[in-house]
Length: 314
Image (cartoon, rainbow, N blue to C red):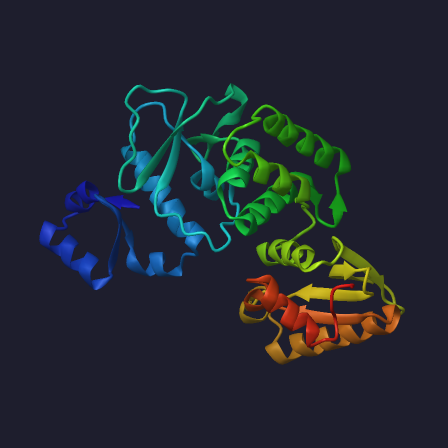
């Protein structure tokens, strides 16, 4: 991130800066702040919003704290299909609080424990960030964010720190109980009671939400299936009420060479086929796979599951 002033100091003329922005060589993040265009194009939406947050906070004055979705990207939480055009800031009180074209200011009291410094920027704590998003975002984005935060706090690889999980949930419950009547509190209560950090990807979080909307019982997550030859496989979802298993496949699993650990695509697909055969053989349950395009709505996921003969219980 470079300011216009810094670019001029490095020898850029105003004309050159404007021309580079028009051509895409530079990306104007907000007035006076630029990123190299090639870096901008490689960023996910969360990364682009993070760049916006950095630009705003470098210009900001006063005691505003980065909050809501803008704090989420500082914490590395996902913004599932949620476009955030403005940076969110919270101030405890102000007689003259106003928002701008690219900044949304909120007036709300913040407990001192809920103001932290993340990457050198004052922002809301992890629990307060999740609480604010649970009240404000779509249910899909809110659940994905809440799941990811709980996973961050409680996951130790395949191990699950139950004490840390219980402490985290109690801490969130304190915020909910102390905000009776606040805007969005009913959704926050539903989202936070539904959250489960065993979901490993936003698509898994959203899939779980859609499955429940379709009438399935809340699925078990990351279910172990023993391999007769030794070891164990883990399946994303177990729908015990219909004796079926489900796997969410993000495209990166196959497209990203780093995630394939150097294995060619055909070898990855063969290994997945062999894994599926073992799981079906051991459990004698149906198994369905789906991706982002299938879990966007309950209807799309229902159609995908029906193709595998899996339907909600009557």
